[in-house]
Image (cartoon, rainbow, N blue to C red; front, side):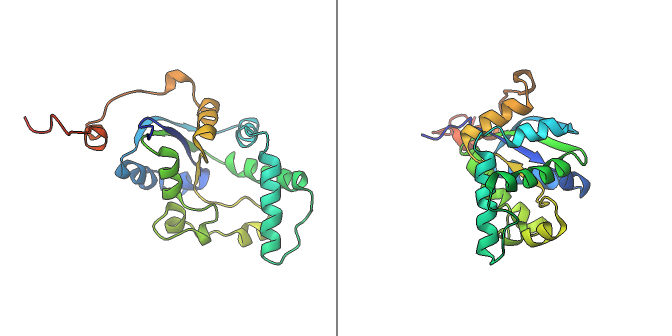
Length: 200
C-alpha cells in the first residue's frame, strides 16, 4: 500500500535561483498533487554540502564507478581508474557549485513522493533528459560541457533517490520543528476513498 505521507527532499540549486525558476519548478510539484511541508532559503557551508553528498557511506565508490563507466561508454579515457580519486574531483565540483549562492531547500509530501519528484525532475544530465521534465525543459547543459569546463553539471534540482535516502537527507537539512503537518482540501480528492463530503 502506498504511503500517502511519504516525504522527499528537493533542493533548488544556485542555478535555479539565479535563473528565476523557483516558482516554475515549485508549480510542477504542486500541480501533480504533492504537498509542501517545509521550505527555506539557505547559503550552505562547504562542510554541510560535503556531508549531504556523503550521507551514504557508499556514495564515493558508486559515483566514482558511474563516472568511470560514463567515460568509457563515450569512448574516452577516465582521468583515473580509481573510483575514490574520481569521486573526490566530482565532490569538489559539487561543493563549489552548491555553495556559490542561495538555494531553496524543501520537503514535499504525498503518495510516491520520491518517484514522482524524480520523474518530474528528469535524468541527471539535462541534454539527455526527456522533454516535459524540469531538466529537459529548462537546461541545456551536458556532461561533455561540464567535463570540458571542469565543473559540476548545472541541472537546477537535487531530489532524493529513495525513501531511505530522503529520510536521511531531510534530517540533514531540517529539524523536526521546521516541518509542518497540515491538511489541504486537495487531500480529499487525492486520497479519500468514497469522496464523502464533497456535496453538501
